[in-house]
Length: 212
Image 1 (cartoon, helix red, strand yellow):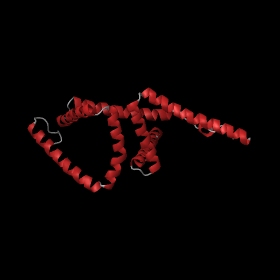
Image 2 (spheres, helix red, strand yellow):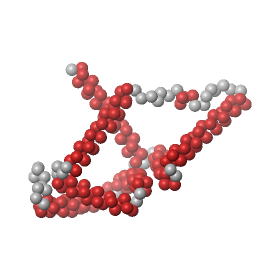
Image 3 (tube, one colour):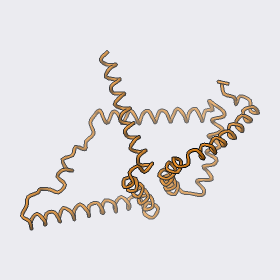
Image 4 (cartoon, rainbow, N blue to C red):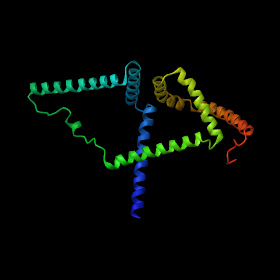
């Protein structure tokens, strides 16, 4: 009884953690706080554009040098200021140095369990698609991969990442503003796709789902 209660409590904590995390992400993507969203969006773009011009090692090194330059300069400035004013405020980053940054065993286990869940789910889905458990779904996946060959020929990985980041920070706002019109067009597209899939299922033996 106690074990089941602890498991239920752990499950509740996990759901609360992911719910809180998702809420924060949604707030960023919907620009609820302009300064935070702008800072995150600009940082991602700056990092990705830097990677298009320099190697990963160079970008990491430059970022580390920039951070060190800022912190060392601030440390020296505060030390000189304390010497001039004859005050003893201590280390300027003392509050941050005392913050606990190590992950507990429970936290590590929680992250490992979440990673394991997503990896297993992905592997099961790929097995289902590649071994043609459902012919229609495997055909859809094949069409998607075929389209991606053209996308890969037009854009490299970093360009695609830049497009993904821009879309993540722009499309939710656009959808929220024009939701009715977008839903109407998506419904029309979904109807057309379902019609085409239905015709394919009728012509290909064994393509109909078991539920049908």
